[in-house]
Image (cartoon, rainbow, N blue to C red; front, side, top):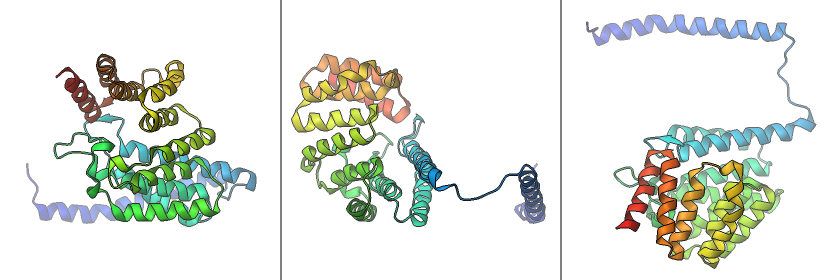
Length: 283
């Protein structure tokens, strides 16, 4: 049975005030329960504030990353997540304008999201950084992010998000992939590993070292990650190793690693890309 559009609009107009009133009553009851339990909304004590801000920044960072490269599903991007993460990071920076890491995270998001228009081809397939059409990058976001991280690095205590933003700025400054200042990126990744060591940082550091000093030097950095439980079953370790082995001329090793990475990822665009790299090697 179909309902005329005018009737639908009338029903919505009638039901909307009731829905709003019901929601207001639920909020009121929730506030009463909080008061009855002795709960109070107040600024945290000075000793806890920094830790709480860092926790908020970490959550926003995770939300942005999930939106920029979805961990599963048919789409590479989830624009609603990256957009909301940037909005909230911008609001937090506005509330804490002197917090270097809040500024660094916003700059990192802007500089990274600026590449989004070039990360997929017309058919939705993944385009790696080295092959992207940089004319498609969002220059306004790059300018804002670069200015933000430049100001922040000059006056605030250095933190991991600022270091990552500086890395993103170096990529953004290169008009072509071949113009990338890889020695500077190696130095920044060494700094980032001291500030915030972890397997993902080591993976990216290995790529920078391979580009600056040769693939074998990058592969040496990957060795300790093979026994890292945090990377067990993770496709990115196999994908990076495959890339470096291909650079080194080890086609058989690269093929095996590309296939392993493709089996492990739950992202459809990434799986297609990795299988395509493997197919190119067999072809």
